[in-house]
Length: 277
Length: 289
Image (tube, rainbow over all chains, first blue to last red; front, side, top):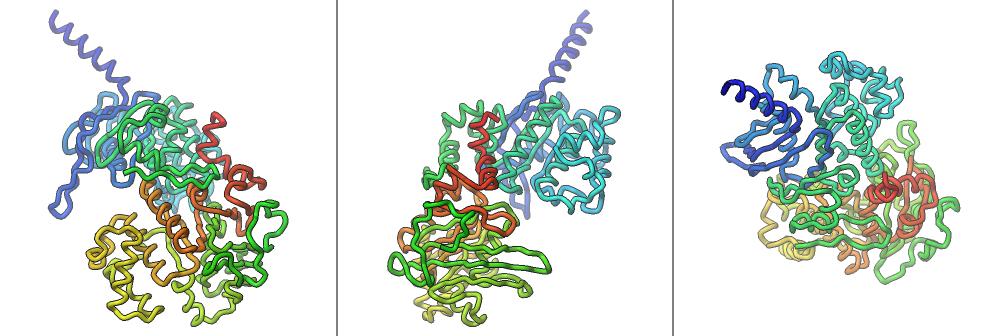
């Protein structure tokens, strides 16, 4: 009798965990170089629910990329826990990752560095499709998804512009059928006129596939375009979190206020952005 | 006077037409006239009949996507283009065509009358030479200052760009400063020989938005204080809107539109300029995208 209840309890807790998405629980990350320890993340708490588009903003050196790497298991967590759908994220090693964790995919900042220059686009997309047995969209479908011509499959990365390469990187991430997409400054190396477009494209593809996305950027005005909820990070701590429009219109934290005030508004009036102390 | 009609925003350019590029609005302020600047490199046509009037004492912005030729245009002013580039046209400054000058003569202008600030201060400053060494070198060369005077001037310049503890800062090396502080130092270095024209090539692109705001304030302050003519190269229309008086929009080596800041940003005429303005997050938001 007692056994059954406990089994039921385990079953339910596992079911709820299935839909819990990504959870960062009191995560601390420290780097040690030449005997000096520096703390990149000071016990941060975050969550990304299934299907949700969440933003993480902050300036360089605040710990945004460390957060992304911790989520993918690319840096070991010193303290605290990263969990995805109930599965603890362990540092990536040579062994195969659990199926659940393979569904976290990352799009990096620099598409020049993240694509293999010596292999055709088709081959690189096929590699990613192999992870997603059976249900992977075809290469043609993937190229349609990111609005590139189907003939692109037989070309090499060097034959594309920066924006097009980032589209290919997005297609590759989507080929694996991710349930969580992490974009680590995916628009930072693109032209200003392309940034909004690529950000909107990332939102579109994740929405259509029902996946969740964590969009990391220093550019709050672009982040605002696409995310439902956002976290503001400063010096390794989450200083503010909330619905996007709420944070944009009524920032509570002093740092968030400073960040928002310093965004230059392209209205042609010649007004300099405000510098708050 | 140098803009062709299709690129000109009618009536918006209130600047004086400089017949020989030598007259000036305020005392000490000089402009530039780029006339039909054309550049071919290895059979590729990089700049196509670029005409740009840089008003004295004003901020002229060059906007456009990467590869549009905005940096090339601004660097041509100091003849900083590849040796095998075929260049035609004229760049008139104080009645002289800069493109005709010998290497020796242009060296007297580089950093002395026309100075440059680059995008990435961590790359444009020498990592192994102290700030003092880097800052005094060109002052001693161009202005013939003694070491002592050059150091005194360097301290003054660092104070001008709001570097805390200028005396201590001179003894330090670039790695001991943040990116924003380094860009301030790079600006101080550019201002060292009291230039008439400052070319800033993406001066805030590598910086955080909070630091960017500070640098924009600094550039505005310098322009107001010294009547500096600034050529601002950036792809960020927010930065452009904050600082530029006039904006030239470049695409594929051509200037497609030129006008005042307000006209270009609020009422663009050229389809390409329109597409740039439409792609601003603010405007995408308005369209409910």
